Length: 430
Image 1 (cartoon, rainbow, N blue to C red):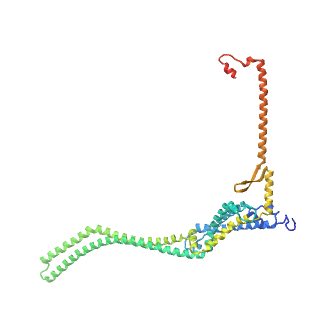
Image 2: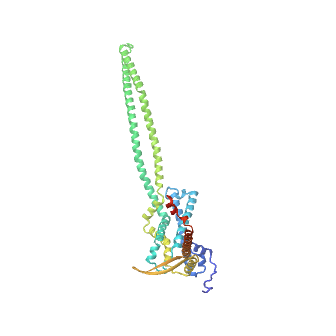
Image 3: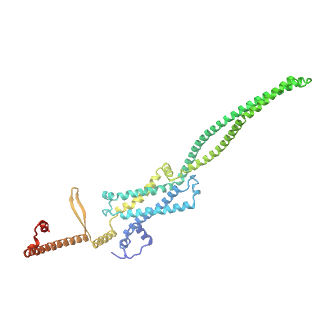
């Protein structure tokens, strides 16, 4: 290799090193690799970093939409507080870090497949779990950014929906309170009718009394020369009796009349309170309608008015999420990959791991497999076999010597090995 073209000690920028880190690549071997490999992994790292950055923005906006203030779609930004902004920024950074690490793991754990620029069915099957995770992450990131991009149109449509919902709730409230007012006025009318009947009866008695007084005055006017005569006295007696009747009637019904008037006053207070309650309910209707400014409703409106734009945004983010996986499957093996493989194989051998490829003919054709031998395990197994074999030989030799010794003892002292009596069997066995 010409050092002038690919100097191994060439310094790279801090940004490039960070992009290699984002791609999960090994800086040591990239420094020994051609520029093409460096550019490839810097590009993959750039995609992973930008995805994490977009996820942070998306997560912050989603948090603000879900947990932030609710109200009028046009003026809702005016209700945002410093605490809301700090919470949204904090959650966005955490969410972005989670997505960044997931993407970095997905990309770094995706192999090169067969090492060619072709994406085969086998490679797709092997990468399927990672692709599924990337698609899910793409949906999660695109939805909040989608409604942010279409925010003006969504706010206008949302404002119209909120107004329409407020009118609907207000109509329901008006109908409810009209019925309540009718019920109160009906009860009030019952008491008013009773008071009216009482007043009518009082007026009737008072009218009769006035008629008697008028008749007496007319009688006395016609016969003023005779003074207060028998007829006038009788009329006065009738007048006095009628006054007593009026007073008795008023005293008899006074308690009831006072109760009826108190009930009428109470019903009037209920009507006044009902109007206040109605005004409060109308304000609550506005608050309830303002609650329809969350993430779910905005996404729904976005798909209703956005047409094909939300789908294009979704496809863009799905491409960003799944792109690095397909790029790695389409990448040809380069110097960096062989350097990493060589280092890994070397470390495996140094640690007693030996891989040996072999092939055999199966029913579906030639099948390639890899046999792995763990040399330390094999060595330990052989040592164990030798120790066990030597121990068996030592044990056999010891038993043989012990047998010879015992036979000599029997020849010299047979009485020590024979006993008589009831314990002879046990002694002999012993």
